[in-house]
Image (cartoon, rainbow, N blue to C red; front, top):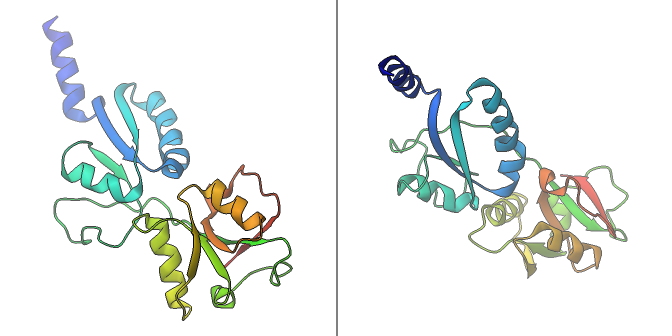
Length: 190
């Protein structure tokens, strides 16, 4: 029994056993965590991972408050600075955003859309505080305008449905569009 206990302690010390709690936004769970969990189960069966769904701007404070061990998050306004010593950052991937336009939109036949060309359109987007809201606002600011956000939802299915009802245009993370019903819209890279 002593040998077994020593082996278990060695596994914990080596990081191949134990429990890790991870907070991540839904797309991050699908793109990063789920594949990693499958690989981890094969390579380190002694490691148990507990996943909590949390928006990108909520997960980092959860790490700082020691509610979770790891956060899969997006960069957002108000996030701790890159040189904040309380955190270690590891870039996992870069998420492209695509323009979602009503089928009858004047730019629907374009292969690619410039954000600046959408300046006069009504916009549909996430609520302030959602990191994707910041992406939309910053993309529009870099293109020289402030978006006229007429409709808001943090659910990208609702955003796409509103665009399909000709209520406006949107920028949506490409991964959020995978497997989604795209009735009444066209999706174009920006």
